Image (tube, rainbow over all chains, first blue to last red; front, top):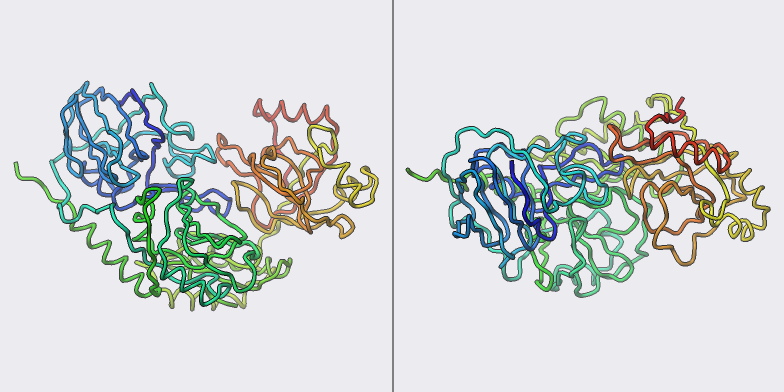
Length: 311
Length: 236
């Protein structure tokens, strides 16, 4: 079991998300940065589907009641165990009574803490993911609080692993995010599309798991910004009347009535989710075939990312 | 019919651009056929007014083969393939300063007596085109034309869950507290979204909905039964 001593500003339980509920208005949830999340699980020998913690900007402090192992990936939050610093992107063995603390993020927004065995919270509609607005999943549908106690499934044997240093993402600078035009690209002017693919867009502080709000050159509509409401895919770039884009993420509304100019490839969602308020993004236009090629490449990178450490 | 890419994991199948029962029925029929045939690579589907968003796994199916497989089903997507619709009866307490706080203003705007507005609203049968925006929120039409009303000039920032509102040709029931621009005529004590229930959402795409006019005392009694988990909604 783990006991939460300090929850951090927004720490939630997530697994790979809820499938099949969007037709009832319930979004998938799950980690914003799937790449870092999956690697955290693999570092402690879990299946990719195991539930772990997503921490936002600042990590929690917690105590473990049993021996086990954890791994911390994603945003660079300094990790300590009983005050001694420990490495991110690697297996961290723990003894009973150890106190783990994640400090404020130096780069990136979201970090992941996986526990060998995986967090044991109830399955709700087939998933352990927390959907905060809908108050479902995780711990009573909410973020962690002080004194919460979370059970961990019994782990198998844990070997020490680490992520190859060249695979650890860099969350600083000005990431380029690749996007496929549509579904409503035809509702924008040529100048509007040029603005999107030529300009810099700064992440705004109101961004959250529902969407990342950006500000930059106006993306002009050709004929009205309202459409007959339709489904909203992960990464769709919604542009309301003010011409400023909102990238819709894992807790997005299932449907909406604003035009969506383009949709970010799934393998680049983490770049948006790890960009901090004040950081800027650029967009590059690609087609669906290219996006599928990039996804296969990202799958291969994931397979090659983790190495066993020699004893 | 148009296939519009929505990134690398979804495609929007657009069967029209208007809000009509005919187009929406085809959307729901197409969704049903895709589920029934178990199309390779399809992960989940989201119907809306006139389009179906199909999520897929590109590791299992390519974009072109998926679109071709869907296009083949479109001609068969008619009302004939759909199972019979459910009819859901929702008790609704109209008026009442606390619950249906816009009833009098909406009636004035429509130049109707409040009671006549309630009679027209409660006398209609509504079709759930789809569920969206917030968990369990139905997008419905079916009101008599006489009570079509422009949306509020200034949307309110908070509308209580269960609020039954009208705007344009649409009728809406808020499933969670949210902002909104509909005129609130009344409130149903039946939760459309209950995160603690095994099936959190009450309504489904294609359902028919009727409102049964109730007084405040019954509203409170049903509310108490809902809290005690002894209330069962009337679904036929």
